[in-house]
Length: 396
Image 1 (cartoon, one colour):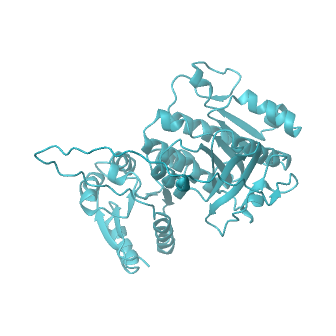
Image 2: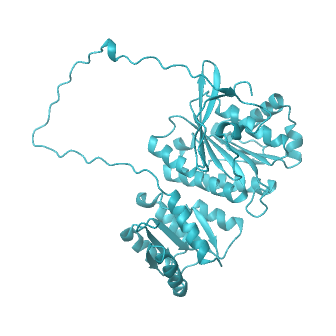
Image 3: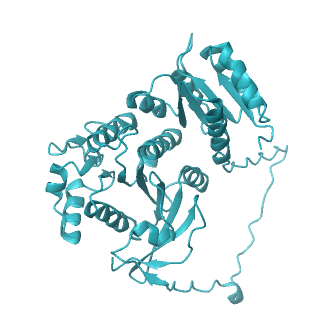
């Protein structure tokens, strides 16, 4: 049910606006309108909608610019945005995702599709909010607090954590994601791999890609914290792969966002960041590499991707830009049918940020190192009930 959710639509065609009003109003939504981009930017802060729908082609200010300006406002950094457009090329979609759009509807579309898309995106937009604690009022006299001695009592000492006993070991002959989640993984799923440094996340991701390559799937490795040449050596030696042949046959592509951190360029890498790292440039590189593999929403060859890891992005960019970049990759993977694993170190961001990222994901995997073993388990997934048992992935 709509439950009084507010939807703001910016569309210069008033005939379409009336159709949208009737369709969405009949579902119980409170619908507000603007007929050009500037008017939308003026009205949206007063309405505080739960969902914003922007037509791309509008007078005075187009939908891309409106979306970009809204994302710069903290109040609307995470408000879902759907773009309406008659333009359906990959470049148009990429531009929309780069300015922060969550979804696309290409004209013409049926009102039935519009209602379904609105209901779906609102359902997924239930995210936890940070509770702001008001500051204590100032008093005329300073309040002096006397520190109390800390007394450690033997009975209050926390008992050491019990070692985890995994219920089984991972099998190389079966799909590794299915083994952890306990169910088939829909194509185009976005998975978060979470754990401390050295807990086996990257190890698992290389196995994930190696299985894909052996099955003839198209694969991409986006190197953020590891040298692409090192990843190639590991895949070759551990899984008996011939990466040079795989690359020559357009089966795998590496996107090098690692070399820039050392102030150097990697001339042997076709898809590499040169100079300073900009997320828009990185998005474009990933899209170009995906086009060579056929991992686009038009060709839909599917396959697998790994982003290892997103942790360093929190040190180099403001949070809204990082979240939009992650959302762009998740959405593009969904449309192209490409399953993507995003690796993040435990503690790289605060709990609220981590919850926002989890909201974007379709599933979350947790990893840890226990007595020199790599253990993994499913923490959550959107398409069913995740298995919570720990699995030993060390021997895989």
